[in-house]
Amino acid sequence: MGTSTRRLVLLGATGTVGLQTLNIIAEADLPLQLVGLSAHSNSESLSRLAHSHAAAPTFLTSQESQNDSLLAFLSDSNAYDICLNAVVGAAGLPFSHAVLEAGCDLALANKESLVCAGELLTQLAKKSGARILPVDSEHSAIAQCLQTAPSSTIRKLYLTASGGALRDFSLIEMESATPDQALAHPNWEMGTRITVDSATMMNKALEIIEAQHLFGVAASSIEVLVHRQSVVHSMVEFVDGSVLSQMGPPDMRFPIHWALSHPNRCASPLHGFDLDLYSKLEFEKPDLSRFPAIQLGQKAAHMGGAAGAVLNAADEVAVEAFIQGNLPFLEIASVTQTVLDQLGTKPAHTLKQIFEADQQARQLARELIRTPAT
Ligand code: NDP
Ligand code: MG
Image (cartoon, rainbow, N blue to C red; front, top):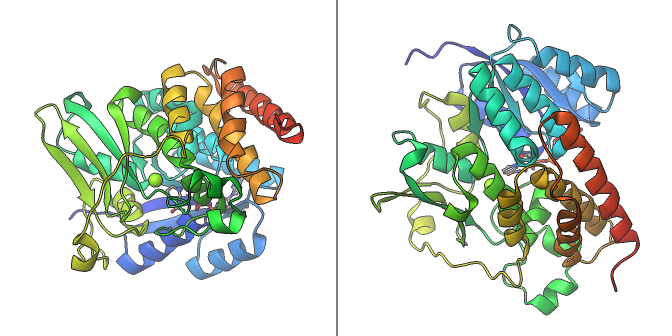
């Protein structure tokens, strides 16, 4: 199918998405040559991966000099063709920025890049001719549904959500939910931060903002539906009333493979249809009294500017405090809401402004966690 070998840089190689990427590249024998791998501090695992995948060079980004070398590497469009960014958190943003500025393709798992700097990055991609290929499963599903239709034909986007580990907990039970309970996700194998974000459904808040920027639709046209089976990865309703969806088992190797093959459809050993899995597909409206975070996503998307960066930064701090046993589960959304209300109107014209807003939001979140409202 005319697929010449492309050079790939994989960021966040030691994480859940990073490892799944290495797995599917090998399993599907994709025409890719690894020319760079990054991790943050897990040097042992990074060296092991570099050894088994014959990739050079490697970058350990907790070391400032290697972080700078990585940014320089990503700025050189002659050095690679596509970068898959699977770093967790706002820390992934400078890398996405460097890739798009260089005009290279960006396979994006790091949703925080678009949540923090969606306007800046989509404008940059337009200017440099780079493509942003979503790896987040919902956005991959929507991108696949939109392949033959322009964004102007969208009436509504339905983002599906598993409901997370606490979907059947009452509000009272949620009050005392432990990290172990919040981390026991029913459908997906994921890193710590996104698994807690799934339990609060803050993950959908971030995904509303991500979808707004990727597909150019207003937040009011994006609806979240709880879909317990995680088979329908999202749906698009078009202006003529037709609804398209993309389906498959909950396995991130599908959207990773799609992004790394695009615009081709390359063969893979994955199988999408499973009668047992597909025999019962349920959809329901989320319970906003138990999952108030969803509304914060709608609110931040309406506010624009640095609201997404502020929401994300406050949530990163609150999730960490929850994991360490320093914040009750339900307080993750309340701390985040207070920070968004106080700092959400900051501007986001430059990376510098975005990181200032991010830092201020982190500081305020830490203060609120040290001195709880009650
Ligand atoms: P993990 O926590 O499993 O992995 C995170 C990766 O990022 C690791 O390689 C880690 O390196 C690296 N990293 C951590 N902190 C930093 C930092 N400050 N600077 C640079 N690199 C850093 O996360 P996931 O794989 O679950 O998620 C990665 C991204 O993909 C997130 O944005 C998430 O929202 C998104 N995503 C994940 C999905 C999933 O199924 N897991 C689904 C959809 C989206 P080290 O090992 O050295 O710490
Ligand atoms: Mg997702």
